[in-house]
Image (tube, rainbow, N blue to C red; front, side, top):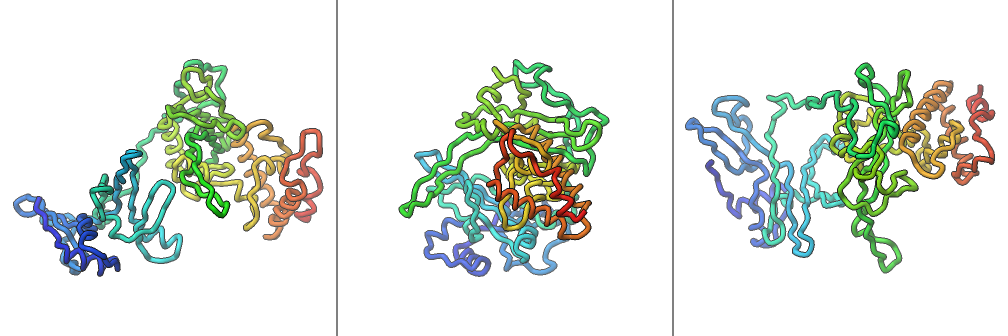
Length: 427
């Protein structure tokens, strides 16, 4: 392919005109050698002509229509990944990603594009020229991602679902000691396959792979150097309707080869050995296997019901559309007030005592489903818009009185059957 080199003077003009960035030295300019846009053209001799392209060079109508025999195509740089060299640690990867107008319109209400730096847990807006600035002594490009302009005009980019429903059927466990008597779930039958809009109760449990690294500042505050690294250890999905409502159809323990520093048993219910294929009695799977199941459910269009799902999906590293998530932590919440635990909500509304000694994801997923049913019942029984808010006010008053602690088994029962709801609802 042919190429056209860009001079330092042209880069300087490009930097000033497009990014409002003025460079302090020629040395800094030397580190910019990747264009934000490139033009590719297939000549009559079937040679590929590739050259840098400045926005200032563009003239309306100068580009040939898509699909013509002598077409000219424009590619815009959308992301770069750089290897930051460090002889002590072996280095690390950082990403520069160009975030488009859709995100900024949704979040900020502005028509805007912006480059962001992704570095571990830091996300920072950066100048567009930083994404193409590489000093080989410490910052080496690893991935350059260009996307063709107007691709949607010619191709249907709708993602097709390559995952078959068979991923939800019975599968063998990786654990050598796992037997049918240890089964904690019943796989879906073919006539139970989920449809768009079906409810699925979901809960996930996590373990810690790396402890948080922090230091105390001189003023006594804590500064996080490196956050703790969490890994998903168990995912449970419960049927949300039908004759088998409340019965799990997924209860996967995720096998890991990495060193677990804390099983968080008090909160996760995961015990040492549960994730080890040699000694575990659980239904042990690979992370990929469980991801395929969740991805299939998301693509089918089910609605996940759970408590604190936003955090769960973030740690699992899954993007689920908002209209497919029903989070009970927000259903029973008054803005600018504290979030309420699943345990307290279960006691208050359902007269259930859960999470006694430890958490259990089947119990938590099932309880979240019951809470959602209770929410629908309460909201349907209200005749005025403020009636359900009165229910929530009663919940918060009770919580403050009890310091948000569920009473011991022999003490008072939940107010579920008391006159609090008829009184509040005016029934």
